[in-house]
Every structure is written in structure tokens, then in C-alpha cells.
Image (cartoon, rainbow, N blue to C red; front, side, top):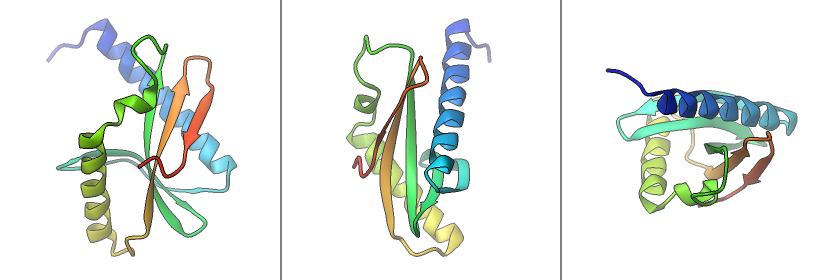
Length: 119
């Protein structure tokens, strides 16, 4: 399998965004529980605990808004997959299913727009 330079750029940009959001969440008092939690339904970028609540965070990093806001990439299908990812997490950990789903938008300049209860 070969990757184009654009694929590599997207991966690097995405990982940078995830690190920035992780640091942001830690500064807000959140505890990081999992990074890149993989399931048959997809991957949760971050799972954190925020004041006793489990939070599933989708990180969307963009170098521009030419194709729209990052949050617009989290459509109904992605939201349905996140619910299944959360159910898988609860089954694996035995934790009570009290969760919320947030979206973190990260821009090229490092700015973060954090949307609690995004869906």
C-alpha cells in the first residue's frame, strides 16, 4: 500500500490536532482515558473523563475552511458510529453509560473550537 504526500500530510495534521486537543482537555481538568480507541465500528479519537462524565471526542483538523467547517464532517452516519463505539467501550470497561459526544475543531493556526454535546 502506498500513500500520497497528501495522505501523509492529512495524517500528520490530524495527529497534531489530536495532541493539541488532548493538551487543551488536560488544561480544562479532564482525565484522558483512551487515545484512538478502535472498534469494528470505527475509532474514537479521544475518550476522556470530565467531572465524572465519560466524553467521546471527535477531533477534526483542517488547514482551511474551503470545504466547510470541520464540524460539518461529523454527519449522521459518523454520529451513529460514535454511539456504537461508546457501547463497545461500555461493554469492554463495564463503566456506566453516562456519556456525551463532543467535537473539537482544530485550525492550522492551532486555534481550537470545542463543541460540547455536539450530538
